[in-house]
Image (cartoon, rainbow, N blue to C red; front, side):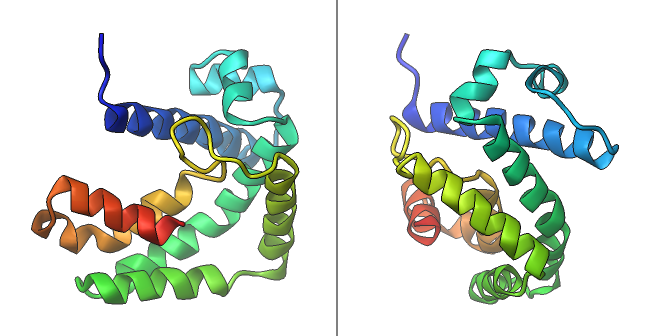
Length: 161
């Protein structure tokens, strides 16, 4: 069976998001989750967690950064007009105005990513986060109907790199 590479990439992004969201939920409850806890909450295997995150520390850092920055970025995009350019500008500004705590955690996450050489996975998708792709797609959403799927993906990837 031949699977469309775009569908496979989207599925991997959804799986990664489910893992990070599960970790965020467990952390928000004040728990100190284990790999098994996160895997169970995300409805994936322990092995799958490690396919997406080379270390459990990297997952916890990504989840923590996400929990601290998600609301402010979403709010910034929503406050922008329906103009794609303005929405991307709001996204960039929100990402550059982070608290020192989020910045410190972000630097730790980058260090962990660099320690794994930051090499893209086999589909060429960077190891760091699905979140920025979602934010970029949200910011560009007014343009989605005006672009064919190939041009849309090209624009999203260009902004993600």
